[in-house]
Image (cartoon, rainbow, N blue to C red; front, side, top):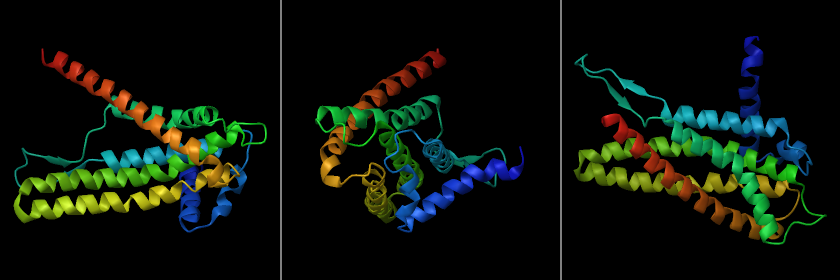
Length: 223
């Protein structure tokens, strides 16, 4: 495999992202109303997750004056975190389909299941890197707050401001749904809201069990 073929998925993803964030919704036309799950939609999601993991968990080595001490800035990636990301991204379209059914929105003239998967994958592909950046900044600012005093207060308010600022691009990324599902917000508002509630409950349950599973693993390792 040559280098061009290796980086092609990344360049395609970047072209897609740049066009979307520039307001060019024509990049969604090939996915709109599709009856099948498009390989590019799934590929873009995987690339988006990859970028998020690189941004969120890359380790920034700080060269110390004492070579016996090495400081690393960044959270650590574990199998539970990776499992949570993959499971939520893959189950999101299933949750949305369930919401269509629960809200009695699904009918013969409504969007196809393939379009639901495509929309979910594409929205996650766009949101994932933003989430990675926000989480990484959050981690750094939490470390800065340990300094105390005015620095800690400034870091706290900056952290809150950045968290609120990321809400806009994440909300903007949801425009994928009416475009790809080839419908209007009024028709999908209820199932989108229902899927959001189900998603939050699902993540909370999975996160709870993964947290206690990690505690169990660490406690066994300390024995």
